[in-house]
Length: 535
Image 1 (cartoon, one colour):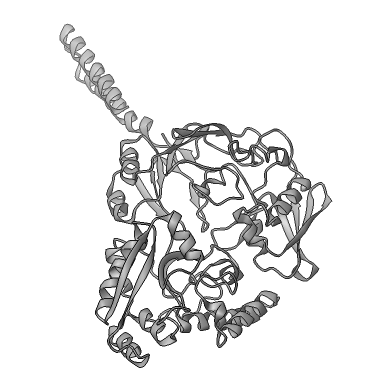
Image 2 (cartoon, rainbow, N blue to C red; image 1 turned 30 degrees about the vertical axis):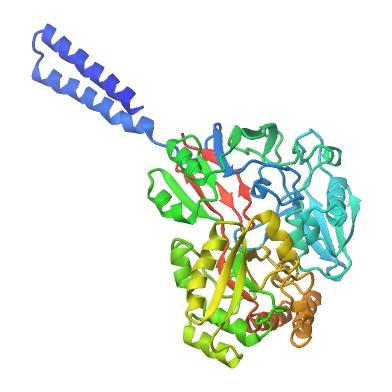
């Protein structure tokens, strides 16, 4: 546009020059008048190019999430699970303030002493196949979520589900066998789709979201188009969304800088600072939830059956150094598995363990290991942050006599070893992005008092109290009481030290400056319904 105006302005001036040469000199007053006209041409140019500040309709958003899709069924958390919200929607959603807000449901009620959630649905919400969503669809989706035999990931959030009852066309009750404080966390992930689409949902997604499926060419692109009957009037702003699989992080970054894509997800920490310095690029990240990187010990394996040894290894963690060397200085480090935004956050526990090798060595000697010991650490994957963290940790452990062998493990071999507790220490990611802390104590592998891979359920001294506190907090209806109970359980967890939180897992993404209105919640979901382009 600037080039065009330059040539236009040059032509105007050239024409004026030719005319002036061909005619007799004009009076001075007329020359001044003519000069003012030329200045107006120059002044108009930047005004015509000014970027809009209000949402604009139209355009195609090109983005890359890395690898390609493998399954579009929203009940499964597999590759690109962050891209559910553009197509599917749930009755409620996670808010930016760390709570819930109405979505497909206008409001909800808690009934039956906390065992029933009644949803009052919006009228006129349409599926992409042209049919209106009703309470029957929500009830069917809820009961499918509760079906533990299917094997989808959403089942973990509905383990206490008892069924669903249609009250009327736009009212449905989601029922539980017991008080389930994390029920709303599950309902916020209950992405609704029509029952008639179940046989093809893995390859042809159908939801109520702002964009509907157009085509998927595996290995090349997924194309979505604006849904004309979307229930939010005036949305979406975009005409089209194209998702391109570009697995290599460096290739994704090159495509962003070259303008081939407008946004990318999963920016490597080492590249974050570089992208922040790039022209016309904004880098951001999802807010922390309860997902975190950690070292975890199997307390059934010697010498980690000793609380003193476990505490010693907590004091041997230099988070500042790990942040610098493994996270490129961009990590959001933590000592406890609870974010500051949580209502059970305990500031007194937040610095319970500091980096203190003298203290670590003292505890090892007290435990009967004055000269240290040999052990190994299982790594989630053959490369990446899990390995990088362990390599930094290895250096400091060596200073207190702990010789640790690092075992990078490809994922197909890693998961059976983790689930079978075939390790002494593991470098792993754990936690659960929930609003209610019950999700941490029931959904996170590190902390749940059942199906735990780290041996805590076999302990007969402190574990019964830990489990009892978590169970009592889950049954209570009083938040103050629950905070006290969860606080006691959290203190046991920290003091026993089998889990060593290192840093919060947050998704980093980069977008071009002409992309506006993008949102990412603490679950990592990508929200595009209000995205618009200024060019």
